[in-house]
Image 1 (tube, helix red, strand yellow):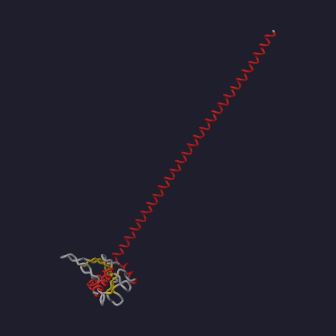
Image 2 (image 1 turned 30 degrees about the horizontal axis):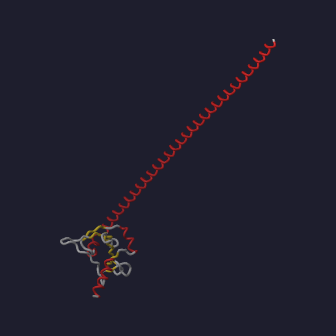
Image 3 (image 1 turned 45 degrees about the vertical axis):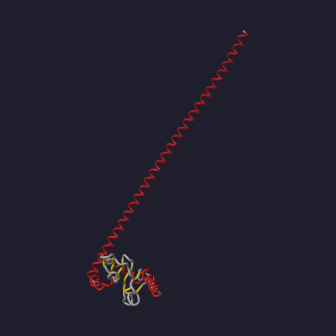
Length: 223
């Protein structure tokens, strides 16, 4: 019973990728490769890998796992690649599709086919071309963004100019109306003052005429 429990715990550790030293598991010795569910009856499971010829590294896309040769020239696998091997990932890879969960089982064939000067140059040219295309795409996107930003700034300046123009026109109309109103009020005031002066003049004249009539009447009475 104890052996079954220990075996279950050990299998769980291997399935979850938990390991004791350096985040990796060695193939061979007392370590075993993690087991997977078998495919349906009559079908063979396919695995997709990225193979890096310069570093002899395999990357399993589906399981997110790296296969590489360690310092003892033994195949190891881990979800995290050692630091000293990571810079090789920028040298380009080959896409492989296999029905084997151990890609290094055909490593000799892959090495002979892909790790030669002609193929390396071809791969180098391919990724150089991709880098140029990415650079051109980035440059195009940057130019597109700059054009869009310039158009946006131009539109903002135009809107600001139109807004200032509208505000200026509004202010002029307002000032014109205010001046017109002031002139009208001034005319009305002058008219009223003029009318008031006329009324005062007519009143004085009437009073003078009344005085003249009274004086004339008194003279007539004496005579």
